[in-house]
Image (cartoon, rainbow, N blue to C red; front, side, top):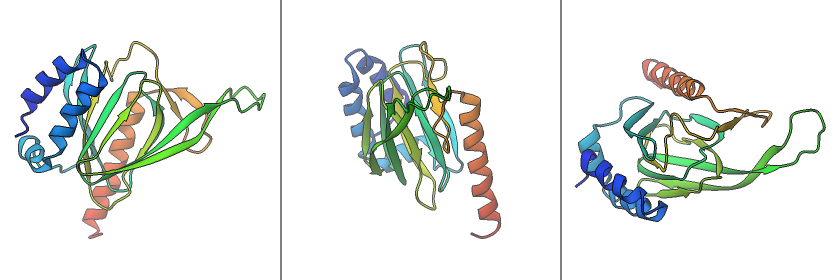
Length: 194
């Protein structure tokens, strides 16, 4: 049975053992999605809901609005993502030297993808760049565990513009705005009967 406080305590111990130990905890948790929902509540709106935050570990309950996307970004720390409701599509990117000479510097190009449903777990290494989409018409919920401080990382993070793929400094305010905008669209659809 999933218990938030117990899960966080287990993650605190596992983070010292490394990413594979954290992955086992997340796999065990999302194997019973109804237990997570019973503990955290039925997701009702998109958002970033921290469950625990410290310099060496961050645990977040992410809820993605229908059809929302988050642009390519990195974490500069490992991440383990476990889906307990809905579907999450991850597009993976790799850095390239675009050779444009226009001052935009190196770019990124698509390098692979992974689609996760309830019970699925993705393991992202420290240097992974990914974008995220909820491809379905309902909320998607996931437990994300990071091997560091997600909100104030010691190494500057990056995000890439969706259209131009130009690298920019990562901005948590931008991330929160993307979730708010997606939530607004979702609520407008509900109000319109969509």
